[in-house]
Amino acid sequence: MVSVIIATYNRCNLLKRAIESVLRQTYKNYEIIIIDDASSDDTYKIINDSFKPFIDKGTIRYYRNETNKERSFCRNLGMEEARGGRFAFLDDDDEWLPNHLENLVKFLDDNYEVGVAFSNCYEVFEDGRKRLFWHKIKTGKGVYYKDLCIDRCFVTGSAYIIRKEVYIKLGGFKEGLEPAEDREYLARIAMSYNVGYSSIPTVYKYTHSGSYAHSRSQKELAFTREKIWHAIQENSQKFSYPIKPRVRCRWLLHLSINFLPDLDKTKYYLIEAAKTYPLCLSWMSTWRLLLKVIVGKRVYSFLKMRKTMINKRKK
Image 1 (cartoon, one colour):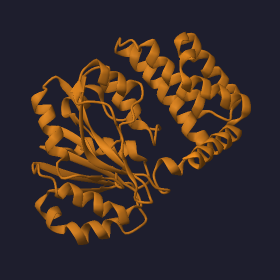
Image 2 (cartoon, helix red, strand yellow):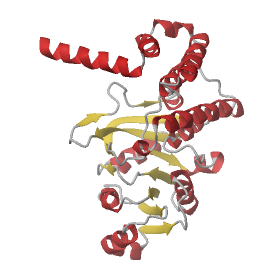
Image 3 (cartoon, helix red, strand yellow):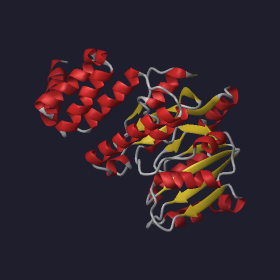
Image 4 (tube, one colour):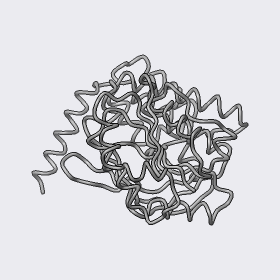
């Protein structure tokens, strides 16, 4: 059985869509665990009014925190209460396509050594546009996908499934790293288990002004990502899993970008990146970052916008 864990907070208008997408799954051996993080809206009423038959059958179980605890706490509580042998997570503002669970469960069944598997997804914007999250990565498993989880890790929390044994061995999410707690958790798993990826898109990840990431300032996000990087380094030592220089360099470059316009932090991480992997000086992304540092982020954005407008006129 798969335990589907949905942490929610004040999104009763979106939560119903998420739950309905689970109920439409072609794979039927699941339970839904909803952790309400002390919502002040009509979350409980909507769940009770819309899904009471599933609550009565035990397909849906609802828990409510007395006070707001953040998403990592909720997910960990969900895993503690889970009865299934696999855990899948769904953010309350996202949606699964009907074949999501069937696709990932089959992947785990066919690859016993894989501890976590994730699928491709569509990013859906407020204006209705959608784009594929991963464009060129093929279905597979192994070191390349482990490095993806440690390095770029653009895996949305709604796109992956883990075995229960992973949680038993490694524990749950590290609290205080929201809204990017998935990055640390997936990197930790990748240092101990094989990682699998399916290129079939089975998730709609919605990007909107009310999303978790948009509720944090750029400065807060930068310091959160810095904490995640420190946690990944600690895990690297704990699990004796060396981080490749190229992967380490990319993390440092990302941090230097995250901390703009804080020039001291940006320069520090930029220098560390160059020292870690000197070949990064041949990357175009490094020179773009240098230009941002020299002329400033706003000026760089203006120049980029002007270039785009000129190119459009030429066409």
